[in-house]
Image 1 (cartoon, rainbow, N blue to C red):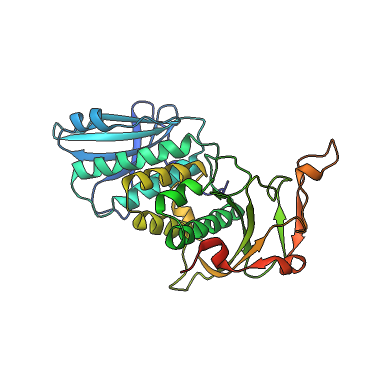
Image 2 (image 1 turned 60 degrees about the vertical axis):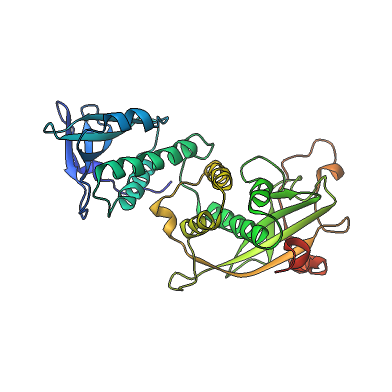
Length: 324
């Protein structure tokens, strides 16, 4: 988890009600950082008009963040107040607030602002309910980006969108990242400037119950100034734009949230281009450590495989993705 200053540090704890500070550089719906009498962090959205019906109909309740609609300073205003409870990290809450503020930057209609806010809260709810309700590490960002690249290739070249999303095991606890039909794919990201090996994190990753198991490496090069580079946020947005059916979009949203992803400004960097992808056919002769060959008592095995050693097992991408 990163350590950075938050706007709440600059707000004194009040003796009654709450103290606020307007969010700078916003020209549409007014936002305020706030702090209440118990020191809890607040984000306050000022709304024009009466939105009680819309609030009661659409509000989403989250673990760790309370959502409340209160009267404003006058009869024509209301305030939507997001309050951070103690057990959720303020850095993470700040990221969620920044994303919401950015999404509402050009919105001036209060009803629209409330609708957009509730849409974000639904996504946050799925994220906070997951096992990784924290910021992803750089290594996790790279790994997820690589999996999403493979997901796109599958629905662009071999499977339907629904089939590809169903195949993506993501955070499901499966031993491989993708399983469909009699095929399984384990995806590994490589840095553009390093690594002549891949790390295998368990004795189960390269042992499958299907007929064909592939190891796929995706070499990611950090190119912050390239027009073709994408961040993790860019990649998620691209897939969401390409998905056609509501069912596919809903399934993808659930899986990406379970992987520990929420749309945060922190994931606007780094930006990657895919330098190369290489697929390897995992056969009985492939150098690997697998559960069925381990001596009794050995478990939780991690090891590295030299890419040079598995060069003879390279396969054509068409074997994995089908023809373009």
